[in-house]
Structure formats: C-alpha cells, structure tokens
Image 1 (cartoon, rainbow, N blue to C red):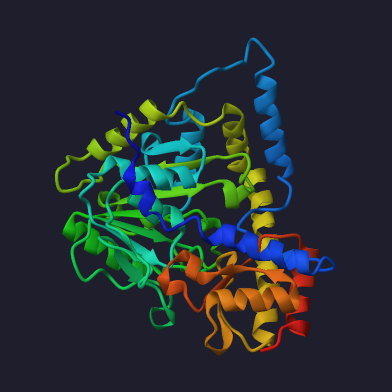
Image 2 (cartoon, helix red, strand yellow):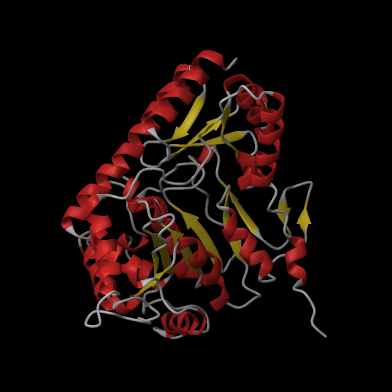
Length: 409
C-alpha cells in the first residue's frame, strides 16, 4: 500500500506569499486605478552583462558543432568551472581543492538537499528569522514535531533569535545541537556576520562535532573588507562547515540556475572520518542529479573571468545604490531601519507596535507599495518588515517617493 509522507502535513509554510497575493488582488479589485509597486521581491531584474551573455552564447554554439558537442557532464560540475571557483576562493585567501566544490542548479535546492546526508535524529537549529527552505525541508525529513500556532515554532527545533539586542546575529545555542543554519549576508534581515561572530560558531561546532550549514548566496554584496565573505576565512571552519553559494544574486542567474556547495574533505562529525562527508555528498549528487546545464556552466565561467567579475560587480553596485535610496527614504520618515549596507535587503521595525501584516496593509493602502511581512520568516520576524533592493531604478525611486509623501507615521 502506498502511503504519503505525513511530515508534509506538518508544514505551516506556504502561507506567506499566497497571502501576499490574496491581499494584493483584493486591493487591486477594490482600487483598479492603483499602480502597485513591489519592493518585496527577492528576484533580480536587470539584464545579464555582455561577457556573461557571450559565455552563454558560446555554450549554445558548442552544442551546434560535432567537434564541441557535449551531453552529460560530471554530476559534480565541469572540472574547468570547479577549478575556476577554487581560484576565485584562493583570491580571498581560502585554499580549497576543486573536488571540494559541487556545482548545482542553485543554492535553494542545495540548501534543501544537504540535510539528507545527515541522520534524521540530528537536532537542527536555525537563525530566526530565516529563509523558509531551511526549516521546511527539515520538517519534511521528519526532524520536527508538530507546528505550534501559539509560538510559531516547530517542536524539536532550536530557534536562535536575531533581534536588535544582538544586532540580528544569534547567540550561541545553549544546548548541544547538530546542524546549524547560518546565512550571511542574511535574508531577510540584511545583517552581516563579523569575523569574531563566525569564529565563535566555528569554535562551538568543533567542540560539539556539529555542522554549520552556511548560506553565502549574497556574499558578493559585502563591500566592507573587514567582513568575511566565506565561512572558510575562519580558522578551523573546514573541519565543521559546509558552504552553499550561488550565481543567482551574484550575476543575475535567478532564471539561469547555477550554484555550488563546498564540502571540505576535512569535515568530520561524530561518526565519520575525514573525507567521508565529502564522499557522501558526491554519492548523493551522482545518484540524484545529472549535473547543471552545460550552457549555464559556460556562463558561470564567464562570470568568473576578469571582465565578467567587473561587470557583475557593477551590476551589484546598481542594486546597492537602490538599497541606499530605500534606506535614506525610510530614515527620512523616521523609521528604524537595518541592513542595506552590505546586503540587498532592508529590515525595518514596524511603527507604533504594528504587526507585520498590519504594516503590510498600511503600506499597500496608503503608498500602493508591497513588501514582505517579517513574521513570514519566523516568529522573531514579527514586528518587522523586509524591503528588497532588487528592482528597476525608476520603480524604486517612485516607490520611495510614495512612502515619503503618502505613508502616515
């Protein structure tokens, strides 16, 4: 008898974005004249750069010639791209081997799938608020109990609150946990972990034989040289950390789909030997995955060229200029704002003790602008609101102007 995975029924997620859509549609029906602008989207909007387009075209052209046609590639990614990624990290002072990189179709699936190589009885801990895929996939895997509506939390998980009091970077767990999900620069808060903060987690993980699952998808948005872009800039991290990264926000590959995960051969847990976890992820990928698109991988090589890096960093600066416009506009209204300096997200405190959804309705009704309620990222997000710097400049400027002129604080 076939039976369903009962853990799917525990999921409380799936509520946030459908509810945003429902409220937006209702408002549009009641106000057909309203031109609604969206500052809540975490999706790139600007065209790919010339060097990257040339690389993608080269990937297509290769498929049109008998001499250069390729079918399946290595499941872990084409060797030239993995070697280029290793050289890219070496430029940051991080020495990794090409066979510690695993190229994929993006950071989101890797963030979801990485938990599958660890036992179901592992205790998982999450920054709160957090990108929902971390929590949801561990629920589906059976690591949680039931969702508690009164707390907004799942039984069995450890939540690490991020608040004004700790500068939106969590304090160390008070108990022993096995898997710890960290994201820096953070989605949704825009906070970036300092070197000493990451060092404290590396020390904790090494002491407890825990694994840090470090999402660095927005690392290229960090402009402050004092802030680490990779967990492996911290001494000892190779023994206790996995890093997940992506070309999506780095180079605008949200639709192209290309990312990578680093599993160091030095990584060990309570019941493993050096190299074993690396091999398990290799085994998982070669079993479940036939490799990223060979066209996309040619584009990835182009991103990592000298011209590609320069162009993509100019694109990142475009979005960060958007972030500055949003940040200054919000501050001019007297709002309490975080992020937006080394990350493309801004995290604002809702005024007057409003809930996240109350502020969503207020912003929509008064300014015709959409953002993302913070509570949708976890219980510690209640009373906060996320705005995104991804958007066309004219949309951002118009939306900020409306907030300044129409929003009643």
